[in-house]
Length: 184
Length: 446
Image (tube, rainbow over all chains, first blue to last red; front, side, top):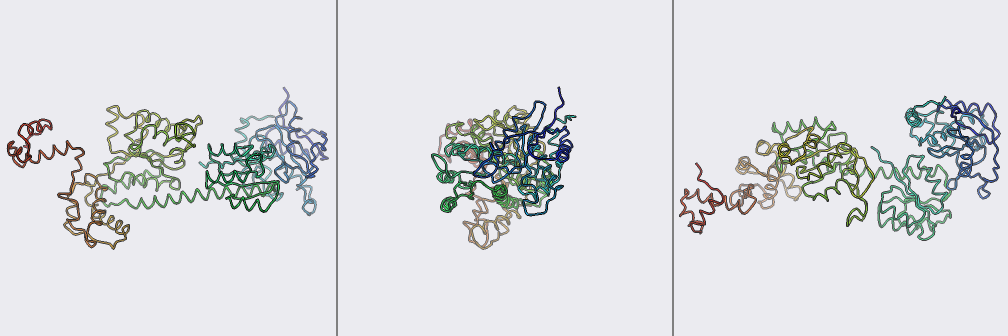
């Protein structure tokens, strides 16, 4: 049987080094190998003309069907503006205890808020978002520790406040859920 | 153990229900969904929700009508109404009908988080308020523990040392010695003091009522169970439960109680879901549990489970030196309650009180002082204000037979057991008197 892994599917124009950095952070946090896959999807099917945004629920369902059999969890990486019917926007979402999640860097860049571009900060924010959504797929809920990556963030400033890693309590919960099994 | 905030989402659109449900679950809330007002009302009748998030425009009963019905069922329910069509009139109507807030779909994620966080804060403030009110009442009652006697000092020392532990306590003592006050003092000095002390008078309830009272019941569990009801164990979560008259519970309840004490989990009557609660047990009894165990009327395992610490409250006759303090305390208490100027007690009355054995203990003393203040001259309590002499009823007499036996013995003694004179005094014939002597097994005192 092939080794279990987390799959990061890139649906945007992300650089290799950019994706490698995210994969490395994922591997470090979840003790599971992360592999990167490029894929294509017709985003028009997910576009809502009334809101001029992309439907996160439908994209999540689509990503869920694209997992390969050895993939423990799959995260779709996007660069478009995501929404769910009840909220004006989302940075990403995942099924709690599920197999898939999505994250988008659309609203994470400084330029969107009239500030100077900062590629390093953008990568850091996106990586935190990916780790956060993956945490949900492992059953972790929002954490009240201000620096924990599982802290709920509704603004980019909130994302900047937290670290890239899980707090000790979330880490302990993750280990229980993973059965302390290391996957590589 | 902090309970999770529960949210009910009511919306006819599945995508909205799913999105909100996922969002709240990730935030650590307990979520249930309903696709229309009818189903929502059914859920609200059978379970408790801290926050209800309801759409205004729904087929069938709309959100505003549902809001009115919820408010008539549960006045303090927190209902947030949401709509896709912003309209000031609807918002004003909703708020007038008691909605907590009003939001327009879609929300900004930050607005949603703030909304729920503020509602949660209100819920915890209300709970804190209730707990503080209970605490004020409780502290008031703890002040009632009066006594400078060695016997009482020993009890207070025991209270102090046992309060900080989590061990079960049995308080024994005669009726009227203040066992419940001791239980309140233990709770008030423990780390559980900010949580409720729930009292259950086991002797006052039948077996089935006690079961429902302790464990709660589900809607429809028995005739008259129209709503789900929390039991006393559930109410005592993080606090203490005081089981008064523990010796009176049936053998079936003894088994159930033992199981609950061992697992700290129970199932509501008519339910199938296990509920857990973190409580401390304090029991009281005026009976000798150990001899009940020996006689086989009280389970030995339950006795040892409950009897980790035993506090014996002394009867008033063993702490005579506390009587003046208690008298002074009750005079102040009842003069204040009755809005009368403070009065005193004369020496003869006090001496009589100190000589009296008080079979009804402090409760009897308290009643005497209250009565004396009511019937007295409003300046000083004198001997004639106290119910000694003709008014006095011997507390050991509980039946007409007891009364007759005591009375006949008294008259026999008065006439030195001269049967003829006694029968004449009692206005009965000699045969009747002989029969009574035989019936009550009366014998001349040596």
